[in-house]
Amino acid sequence: MAYTVEHDFKKCDGCLSCVEACGKAHHFPPGVANCRIMKFEVVEEGEKKPRFAYVVCMQCRKPRCVDVCPTAAMRREGDVVIIDEARCVGCLNCIFVCPWGIPVFNEATGKVSKCDLCVARVKAGQKPYCVEACPNGALAVKEVKVGMKKPKKVPTKKFAAAATPPKGGASATPTPPKKAGSAPAQPPSGK
Image 1 (cartoon, rainbow, N blue to C red):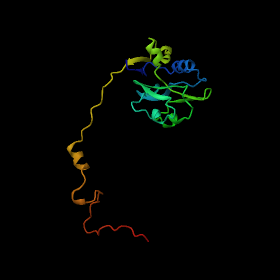
Image 2: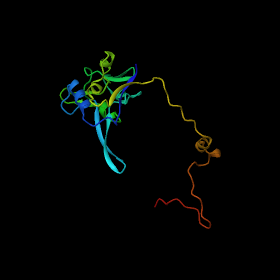
Image 3: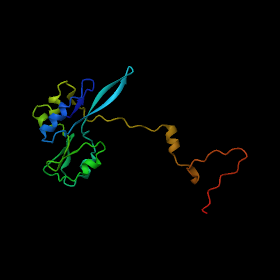
């Protein structure tokens, strides 16, 4: 089953139980985990209210972290990007290339870690540590439909015409309209 961990921000109070459970389960130093909770504020009915976002690996279809890993410790298995910490040399390439800064370096082990959706636990019929620890039910395992693709955008005639190179070798550089009675603009001299 392809799945993800879904976050319901309306139920989340920012308690960090998910972060603490993940960190403890993966033997991280305090305050480090494979998931994060970010706090931000929204204005509702003229009043500022706190909101929390659950930040975790996106399990990219074409993960950059996999491409730059020199030991193949970071790899895609099915729908999940996993890291084999035994093969990790702690080069940090995956951390630098991840557009979301998701992989974390564990100073105690000298290895990199990231969320693998607790794939071994889910296969065994258990919930991921973060989901299990959430006291508010803000995190849940949700099945993802595999193979669903967004339809490709087809260029409109207007766009297609604008993207067509000019005929007869004319320049594609736009020329500003001439004002009546003005001399054509001259390029600056090289002096």
